[in-house]
Image 1 (cartoon, one colour):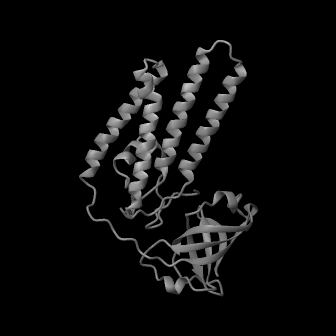
Image 2 (spheres, rainbow, N blue to C red):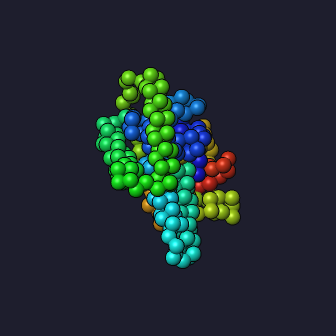
Image 3 (tube, rainbow, N blue to C red):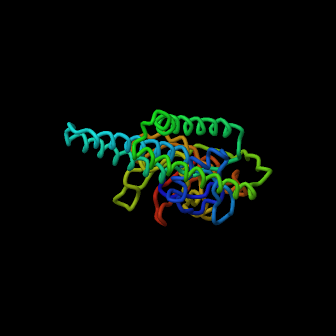
Length: 279
């Protein structure tokens, strides 16, 4: 994700990495429709930090148990310490990048979210059973396990209180999803030498939101600065692709702007990034 933007209004919004990385899995357990609020339009959006945070916590605890077991062992080569330490750092780096890159999306609280809640609940129960409950019953609790169990239960209690407080403000009726027009577009990305992206094929993710300005055949703007959602990329090389786009704002005249042959300029960090043509 180059810039986190609201899927309703297109404005920039701060990442929720530091606010929800730890408590996210627990809150997701109580309410599968946990949403964030855009500070600009005050509408709700959904991010995917919950699932990634679960993997992050599970990996962190697993590596902790492995490290503790290795430390207790006497006849262990020092190379093994470095191998697990490097694997741990790589895992943390990957999870951090994913948490900050995945774009935000609209959420209409569909029924399928209940299935996700069941999956998340099962993961948490299995996690607790394997690493905390069974060692407790078998009197095989290590110091690291005791600490992890205390932290886990503390976060669980915090998420419970947080859920009860937020439940009072939860809307009873959710908006129905709108059918937005989607069109194909051919995108030519500016080279890095001309202050474009370094490697668009890697940097631009599915669901990315960019500011654009539509122009006519003579290069005259025919719209104000708008935002579009880009999905379903098919790359011919590192700087050229075909994808689908749709306007972010619901009240924008789609039929006028999303006509075949219309062109648009795409921007990033207040600079020109690419040229697109509706195909």
